[in-house]
Length: 159
Image 1 (cartoon, helix red, strand yellow):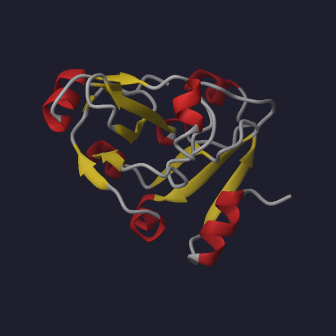
Image 2: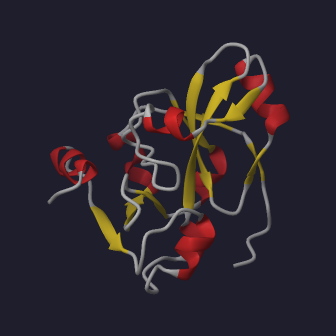
């Protein structure tokens, strides 16, 4: 059975790899442990769904796996405090479940941290816990509409 993201990327003519993982993964740490040596650890990225505490605004943020969200910057950019979405809100975003969200399948606005563009490729959620998705950063604009933001605390990569 083909994943939804496979069909979408094929239709857009985007080269990609689906990376079969040793077991279902839910965190960046899981991906590091169970990637069968297929993933450059510095290219792991994650997608977090945020919800406005007062506004209810839902957004998706794609950023490098070792970086952390800067919630002061989030508040400044989106006009109020935001929290990480719960499981039901994540499922409602269209990108998958917590730990497997595919940033290119979400039905809410997508924001990409500018540090992602320092990478050649990204490895992110595919919408399924048992495989990851690898795409070239230069292809991101072919895949999805998004806005580039500066939204993370950069952490020295220590994989």
